[in-house]
Image 1 (cartoon, helix red, strand yellow):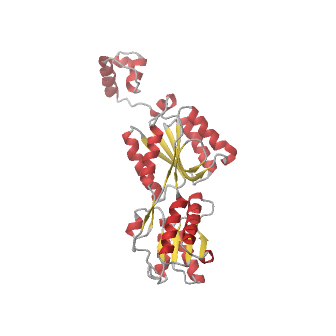
Image 2: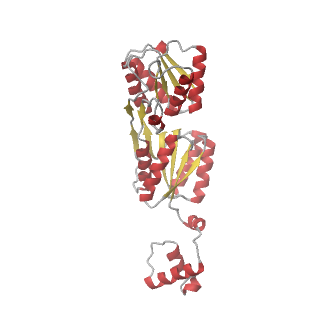
Image 3: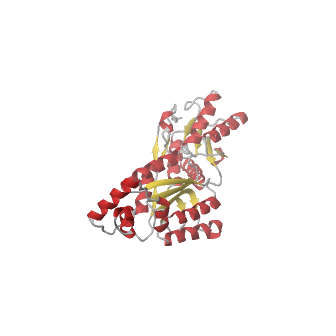
Length: 329
C-alpha cells in the first residue's frame, strides 16, 4: 500500500488508521487513491490491539426482555451522536459469565463497558469481578453500571422500592384489601425491592399485613400465568388485586384470570411495573409504574464518553400510570 502510494509506511498508516497527526493533503490523496485501486480494507481487529476501539459494550443479564430492548435502543441512538457504536453481550446474570466477558473485552479494548443487572456487588466472586473492571479502567476504559451497586464506578440506579410503595398506596387508597403480590425471583434485587415497596405502600393505607400474600414466580409472562393458575386452583380467597413485579408477569397473570373467567378489573385489579409497550397494547390497558429506561440508557452512554474523573452516582424514580386494569372498590 505504502509503495503503491509512494509514501512511507508510517504515513500510510496515519491516513488509513485515522491518526490525529496531520498528513499533507497531497500524500493523503495519494494514499486514499492507492487504497481504492487496491480495494484495501483496514484490519479493525489489528487496530483494536493498538488502541481502544469506538465500540461501547453493553453487558446484560437477559437480552429477551422488552425493558432491556428499550435501554439498548436508547443507547444506540446516543452512541451514534458520540461517533461510537454499541455491541451487546448476555450473561444470564451469572457472575462467572460476567467476569469471563469482562476479561475477553479487555483484550478487545472497547471504549467503554456498560453493565446492567439488578445488583452488582463489589465482593462478588471474592472481588474478582471488581478487580477485572479496575484493570480495564486502568488500561483507559470507562465503566458504567445501570442497576444497584456498591462498586466505585459511574452508576445509574432505579428507586424500585420507592416507586412500588407509591403504587401500593394507590391500590390501597382505591379500596383493595386482599392483595396478592407476584414478587418474582427471590434472588433478583430489583423485583425483591419492588415486592417490599408494594407491601409497605399497601400497609401505609390500611391493608392488614395478614391479607397481603407474597407469591414468588419466574420473572416472565409464563411465570405470571403459572402463578395465578396455581392460585386459582387453590382458591384466591376473595383476592381483589394482583400486583406483579413487572409488566410481563402482570400480562401473564391477566391471561390466566381471563382463561378462568375472572374479569379484570371488575373482579380483580392487576398492576405491573416498567411500562413497556405491551402495557398499552393489552386489553385492559395495564396500570403500572413507568421507569425512565430510555433516559437511563442515554445517560449511561453520556457517562461512558465523558471525560470526568470522579464517579457519578445517579438514582432515578418511577411514575405511577393509572390505566384500565384497576378500579375503585
